[in-house]
Image (cartoon, rainbow, N blue to C red; front, side, top):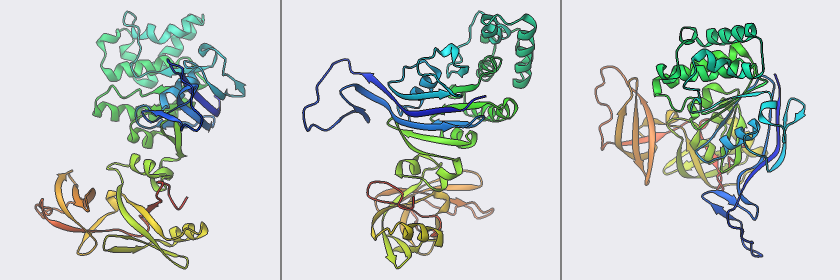
Length: 388
């Protein structure tokens, strides 16, 4: 078991064409990544301390640098700057095979000509482990993953979920200090993904090692991680427990990325009277909760134009509030997701379905939306949460 420490980690991919930056010229971007004289900066100033036996999830949209970071931990990518420690050992220049890590890839990466047993035993054979030890470790891992009955089969005879179990089993037998997983469920269908997510939670409880898990799926991040690291354009946006980043998003990107359906954003204004704050959106004015007022007052936040964030489940339909027109009503069983057009924005509200009420939300109807002051999130013109 081991702690993992990343200090000021940076990854730069050299430009194919060298170009000198002129004096006073602003830094360029390719896509949303920074381009310097060194090249394209895929990961910059990445600082993270992962505790022993902690389950950390790196999450973000495609191209944000999460897989690159994982590959640097694995030793599959060179580190352009900073220091990486596994345990107490600096491993920047240590070969992948000597880092005491095991990696599970998105594509399973199984040997098609070998049986499940031989796939799982392969790394132990390379280490010249005894036959008895190999057999014990393979069968223990197979039992944990419930694939004992498939040990004599070849990968082509297995389903996607079974193949992913074999890939995980191959990593388990090595008894690594750190377990790295790069989007291991993205090739599975929705139902199988849910099942495998539960399997990974149970697996973590049984093998109790350090996990670093990469995904673009925020549901996986929220359900699996002790802490999650949200990335965008190679930069960490926020680190915290799933509940922390959901309840207290650091900026508009995190607020919009975490939560399904995503947070609604309104143009509004923050009002102040002494140490009491209110938010105004359209014709609606709501006083913020005492806790929120205290945090804003402690920072002496002035009145200003804001972006107001309200999650769909926190919007209430009533006789007064922000006016909008129902465009789409999606029946989701116990609730209905209402897409409402209001002041040129698409707002989503979740309304409970009451038995025997029929269609309570006809398309084209005008509705009014309100919310509690404890559920309002206030962001400044730069997109930063004014409370934190």
